[in-house]
Image (cartoon, rainbow, N blue to C red):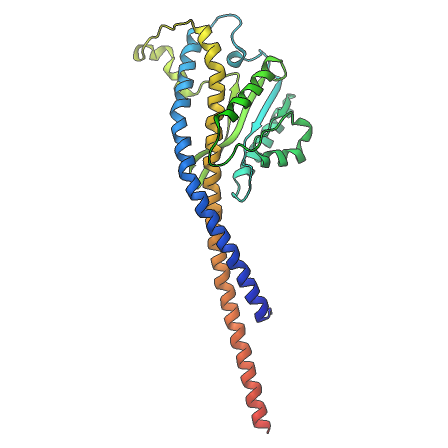
Length: 298
């Protein structure tokens, strides 16, 4: 059994830890409100960009020499995966979920005979994949997670992807990140950026059976010119939206993890306090017995 001094030291240490986790929870909650607002504000814009490109792609379908961001290179051999995580830890399984999904995707592609390249975003992704798949990493990005995510980070990453695509070094590009639902739920997901894949809402708007329900547009300038202008911008917008989702999910996961840690610390303090009081009472009882036994012996 631990001594009273050891129990006091352990209780004091846990109380100090509880103060830290409680403070981190409050900081994460404050950051979450702003990050969540940014992520939710970006969703309609990103969805509108996808719908617009679906309309343009439908109008330009069948033309020769389409943009590579839309049609790809015509091959499906070299895949670039971009796992997006946080720079810091202490956020539960937030980063591990992205690691796991990315690893599963790598194994599936390699089993199909595909070549896989990695471009980790976030220090946690870089540290993890540097140990497991260092030979697959072609570049890295860090320092973009946090309360304020600059659009320049998405612009730089989009330019890197476009340069790799134009150089013929990749055929397919996919993001792996956590979609933010609420403070307790972040869902790992894959989003293919190149070739551009329209979601169900975007393709439904341009489906032949829906043609009577949607407006028919005349484009000025022509569709090919608009696609050349909008496809790089769409790439940046989709990356930026995923970075905002990651930032909101990170703060939500950290707030939940620190709340659980604070609660666990409180339960540990209560349990140790009971042991401390029981041990103290036992020591007092033993001392009284020794005093009484000594008095009776005299």
